[in-house]
Image 1 (cartoon, one colour):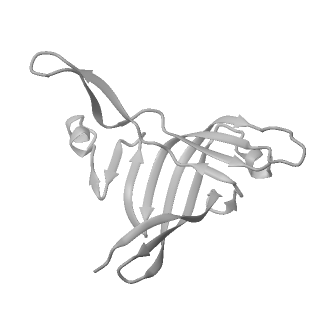
Image 2 (spheres, rainbow, N blue to C red):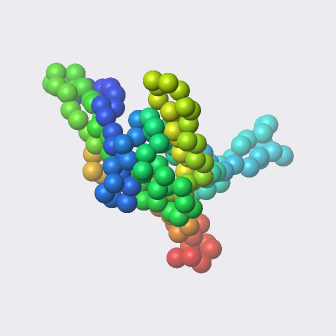
Length: 174
């Protein structure tokens, strides 16, 4: 019997436009926070923050470099950048007594929002940071597409099911 324990991320890399390794020290993946509205009134025992199907608040992604780099400076413009993250995740199969490596891949189209060159400190990291607005994202786990979000094309798919399909049809978009 298999008892797989997801343990940790081993390492990761970030690429710009499919080829330039960004050489980042840390990255924070975007949180998908649903847009909500308050539901209250007759027939409801209190207040509910109800999510709007397939709609999300601003979706941010950040990268932190040790110092200012050429690739950091390339991202100063306001164009949409193709960013792709690859992470090796470590799992332990307690039933087999073996470790397994699983790939997490996140592809994003993102626009630079904040550019922070960092701190000038003798003998220490500059903590150069950049924050992006994500307009498109696709997440793969072990080569299987799991999530796709395309804010401009009205797509939000989870495990192959488009959560916005009925809404898009009702709006005449499909």
